[in-house]
Image (cartoon, rainbow, N blue to C red):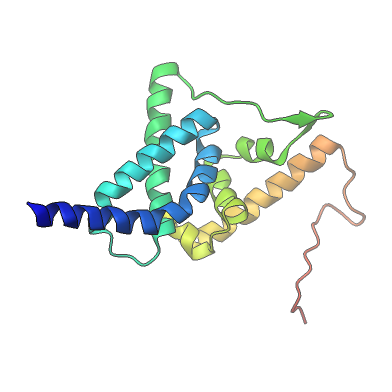
Length: 180
């Protein structure tokens, strides 16, 4: 009996050591998915509880993508419950200054698959491979979703700011450090 308790404490300590450094990332991702602080906090709590229960079976090397994949599932389940109860999940409007939507609001307005990948890449700073692990799609799909999301964000930002397109068309110029 005592060995079992010590083993449980060891597992709990290993889980804390592995998962707690990613708490801020989990919360940031949950805020994007859930769109309210209270729902995000609840989702992260449920995620960490579920992850602790599954930690003995974890065989990977990267805890962050595994944890965020669990969080995504928790959020999808919660949003499904909210949809069933109210007909639609609540959506809190983002802040606006001088009538211009903030980037957060623009990301919230993206379709869910695009908002997820842009948040995972540009807010949480995951690699394409890690994003693929979290979302369950191929890396090439991640890359195309990020490109599409960035294009939509740029168009929405320009429309909100009524900025004229750059000279020579509406193409965004990308500067690469090692371009030949």
